Length: 450
Ligand code: NDP
Ligand code: 2IT
Image (tube, rainbow, N blue to C red; front, side, top):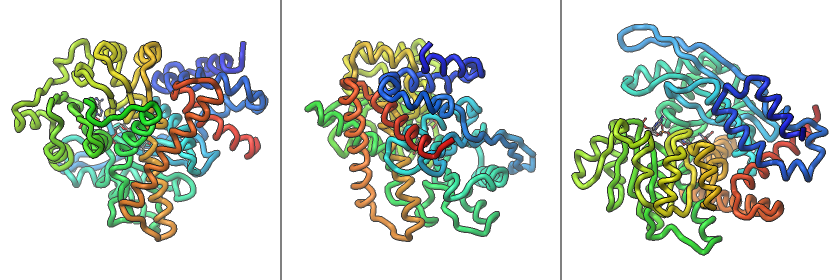
C-alpha cells in the first residue's frame, strides 16, 4: 500500500470518516498530492502526512450567556489550532447553528493550505459556536460575544492565534469580541482582524474576499484570453463575500444576476440591484423576500420550492458561477445543470461550496475550476495586512490595500500555474493549489524538527 493510501486508511481508522466534511477536504488534498509525494520521498521519511492531518490543539468550551429576558443559555464553542508551522494560527470565527467539531476541523484544515498559498507567514485555525445570531437583539449579540471570548481568551494572542470573521461574524461581533479581550487582559493586543476601522481595522478588509475572488478569476481568464466583461454571472449567498463579489463584478463590466440566502434565491435578469441588496442584508439583516417585494421584475424562489434540493441560483444560464454561501451548497444536480447551460468557469467564494460529486463532474467536463483555497484567500491576506498595520501603526489607504490585494491574488494564480506546469497538470488548479500549499507547510515542518 502506498504512503497516501496508508495515511487515508489510518485516518479512517481514527474515526475521521465519520467527520464527513473533514474527510471530504482531507481526501481532496491527499488524492491530489500524489505527484508531489512521488518527487519528494523525504515527506514520507518525515511522516509528514500523518503529522499534518491531526490538529495541534482542539479547544472545546462551554458558553453561558443571558438573553434580554434573563434566561440563561448554553452554547458549544470551539477553536481548532490546526497547524502553526508557517506562523501563528490564523483563521475566522463562525457563529451558526450548524457549527460542530467536524465543520470547524474541515475549515481549519483548509485554512492551513489557503494561508500557505498566500505566501504570508500564518498558520491555520478556525473557531466558532453553534449560536444563531438571527433574531437576537444587539445586546444579546454583545453578551454572547463577551461570554465566547471569556471562555477561551487565554488560548490566543497576537503571536499565538489571531481570530477573524466568517459566517455570522462581521465588524459588529468582532468589535465586541475585541472589546472583551481588551477588558480581560488590559491590552490592545491585535488578536482579531476584520475590526471596525475605529478599533484599528484595515480599509478594504470588508471588501477583500469578494474583490479578491474576482481579481483571481480575471487573472486566470486573462491567461486564457477570456474576460468577464459583459458576461452573465450567477452568485449564491448575500453576505460579506457575495455582496462584494457582486460589487466588483459591476466594476469590471460583468452582469451579476442572482443571489441567495438561507431562505431563498433571487434572479434579477437586468442585474442585481446592489444598493437594495445592501439595504436588506447589511442594514436590515432581513430576508431576500423583501427584494422581490420592492423589485417587481425580480423572481424570488423560496428554498422549499427548489427542484430536487438544488438551489434555484444554479438553474440560471451563466458564463461564470460563484458559490459564495456555504459548504456543499453546489451538488451534483446543480453541477449538471450548469454544464447543460454551458457554464465556462466556477470560482469558489465560500469554503468548499462544491461537493465531491459536483467537482468530479466539472473535472470530467474540463470546466475551469478556481478552488476556494486560492480564490477566496484575499480575505485572510488582507487580515494579515491589518495585523501588520496594527503592529507598525502605519495605516494604508483603501487604494494601497486594494493594489496589494490585486498583486497577492495575481501572485497566487501565477504560483499555482507554475506548480501546474512543473507537474504537467494543465489547468487542474485544485491539484496545483493543494500541492503548492502542502509543500510550503511540509518544508517548514521539516525545518522545525520533530
Ligand atoms: P455572511 O454571514 O456574511 O453571509 C453568509 C451568507 O450565506 C448569507 O447570505 C447566508 O444567508 C448564507 N448562508 C449561510 N448558511 C447557509 C446555508 N446553510 N444555506 C444557504 N445559505 C446560507 O458570511 P460570509 O459572506 O463571510 O461567508 C460566506 C462564505 O465565505 C463561507 O463559506 C465563509 O467561510 C467563506 N469565507 C469568508 C471570508 C470572509 O472574509 N468573510 C473569507 C473566506 C471565505 P442568511 O443571510 O439567510 O443567513
Ligand atoms: O475562511 C477564511 O479565510 C476567513 N473566514 C477569513 C479568515 C481571517 O482570518 O480573516
